[in-house]
Image: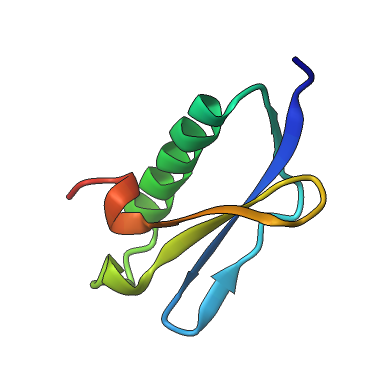
Length: 78
């Protein structure tokens, strides 16, 4: 199976953090795992955000079509 490039854009509180480079992943299991890792890093480093309930990650494929949208609260606990 050929790897596909996916982009992970995080949106919340009227802001969007755009993933301009993306990452190549082999399957949807890897896509979900990568989204969780990126969400954890964002939450650890974004000290100015107290409420993550409004934030979500939009996962786009190499054609920039949204293939999955997940609330950050589903990606990372805590």
